[in-house]
Length: 356
Image (cartoon, rainbow, N blue to C red; front, side):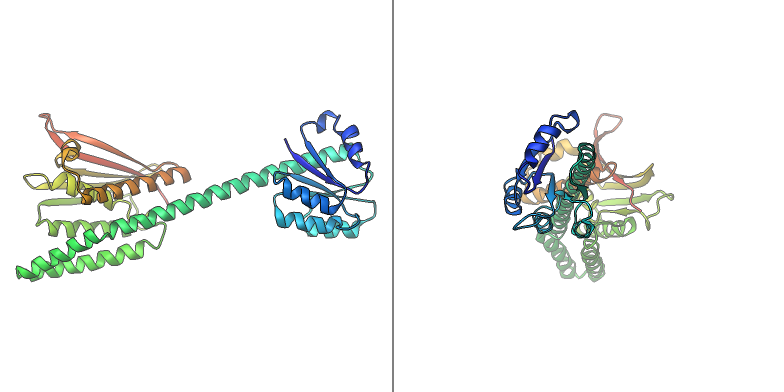
């Protein structure tokens, strides 16, 4: 139901509309409000923020229709205004249109013209409201995306990770393993620089994301003294330069595979990352031959574990936001089992819409 405000100093205007127009089938369903001057009309607008349409007489004592038009637009730009004028008043009509009036009607008002103009204007109001709703939802979505990206950066740059890296470098120096210390320090500095650079953009090339991921995995491999090997397989059809992904989206899953899948193993672990295209989506599989989720879930939960879980949670939330914006961003986790029934590790499948 549209709410319509009529502001006209002709005292019989309300009676004319309610008796002659509101009884017609094509005007039923509208709620009318009436005011006899500009000041009263302005008060109505302030009291009723849900007014959709205002019909304003141009020539009124006190606050005229042109002034009231400007006041209404300053309070609520979504209210559409139809000006009522006498024949030949084209100068004021032109002024009204320049100040944001949607249309005008000549007096005496014809019921058919009024009906057609109201329908057209209400349709425009509905379109503007829908656009405003979409804009508002996008603003909230973008704000949430920005918040998650900042949280992801903080999770990646948490003091615990930095402390472990510096501690590892120090240990290499104490053991006089200068080449390892130098390699670790170079990779660590490159990773920090990449993280800071990549986090400035909502989307980065897949190539830059993989560069950061390889640096991180190399650092962890050095830190854990080669207790695992890793391989990265990128399908030749995947253009890592043009395809865009959210920054820091993959590292939490690789980190989780290393710390909770591979490190508890008694023997050397293996980590494999597969990247391919599937239609309009990018499929990323992270496969480890670690102890599996059932073992990991029974392990004592430390604060470090909670931080890594938070990293995965943040990435999951960011992928969910991609689902709202585009086709689908999702995560699947599969428990792998060997032929003899023994746990064979975990596979995480990440689906990301392809951005070019």
